[in-house]
Amino acid sequence: MVHILKSYNKLSSTVADIIESQIKEHPLSKLALPTGSTPLGMYKELVKRELDWKSVITFNLDAYLMNIDHPQSYQSYMRKNLFDKTNIYPNHYHFPFRPTSAFEDKIARSMGIDLCILGIGTNGHIAFNEPGSSFDSRTRVVDLSEQTIQDNSRFFDSVDDVPKQTITMGLGTIMESKKIILIANGNHKLNILNVAMNGEVTEDIPASILQNHDNVEVFYCD
Ligand code: PGA
Image (cartoon, rainbow, N blue to C red; front, side, top):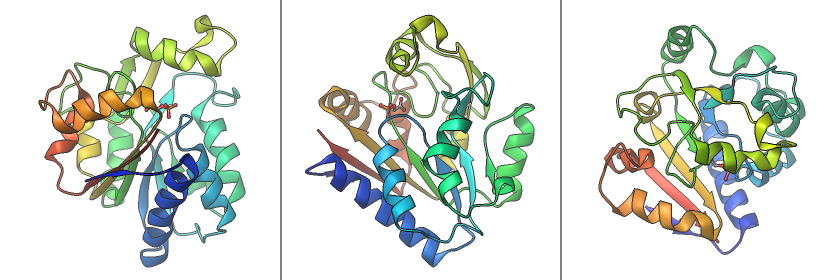
């Protein structure tokens, strides 16, 4: 189901509503969370709502292989935009780590992800599962594509500073989430969103796998 929203603020508050309901109805929820520019408004909304995060467990979708204290690390991003502004316990939030099988075990031991929030890259990636990723893939270390390095260079002083590798949840891992929300903002995402949601289900367009999940909602604004 694709929802077209009137503004970025509306997109952010609508997805925050879904997360708020999830946490209120199920305080022990396990969430998978994204980084990037699209979720910033959603995190701002969530912080404003002063929800009770003390029983919530989170798993970030991906993390650059870099110093976690670097301002552009995803650990810094999450602390700055959400974790340090809520009452979540630091030992309740997780970023993919090595050995990646131990990260997978952690998700499995927590009985799986209830709600997974995803962005989409202009090449159709979800988390950092770049085109060509196996639909069965699990959490692993991956090389970023040239396209993604270019896209993400806006966050760094120069393109050379963008990390070349990340650890990402796999497509198989993501697809085991009970519910998935995909958010996309901007005209530059419209074409890939259309291809992913209405085109062939193919590993060349990683997000197309979502067509095979029975509880996915997509929220888009231009
Ligand atoms: P963006 O990234 O929100 O910064 O556009 C999305 C993604 O690459 O998954």
